[in-house]
Image 1 (cartoon, rainbow, N blue to C red):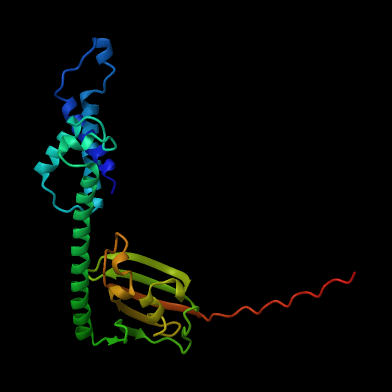
Image 2: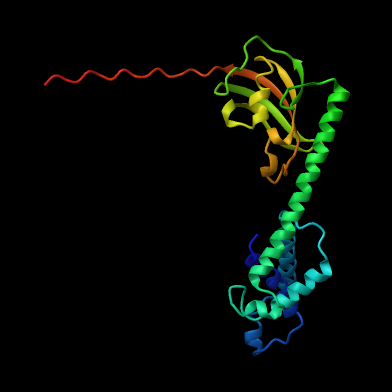
Length: 255
């Protein structure tokens, strides 16, 4: 998150508030060119929504709203912009330090959420195995095969599988779903590469994949850091990898 983006949105929002109370100059003909009160109110609200989305989408958490408003108002009063060397003097802090403070705050929140997800995931996996009598692999995957399928199985990481699947977090939130999708096993998370070799073609399996075999600390926004994942999978088809034969070069043409 760039500090300039935060300042720009915050300043714009506070400016709309300030405009509502400041004297308007110019003749009536000139003043009539200004947005109406209704337009100003709507724009003020939408700027607030925009700023709120920046806060929520970047996981700032529960901020001190009084301090937030004060910062917005101070940002509007400030002269220049964050790229100006004199800008930071108005806040007794350099813009680069502002960025470091915000980044540090977000990093701490990320570390907390990642550690919490990992802690909850381990407890969930242990409890899920005990409740369901599930099997586990040496790597840590827990699974239940509801239909074993045929004797045809994926054996190589380069084999391709065609599946229907649904992925959820441990709280039941669905983050992904697909039907009839095909992919080679060396192009997916490690838990899938291993898990798809546990069941035969036509079979059905439920996988609980620990974070280190899923996305780990690089989990996308809809999954999160260090998240344990559940997948219900129907293995529709298995296509073994076939090495292409090297083409025999054509003999040189006679001259």
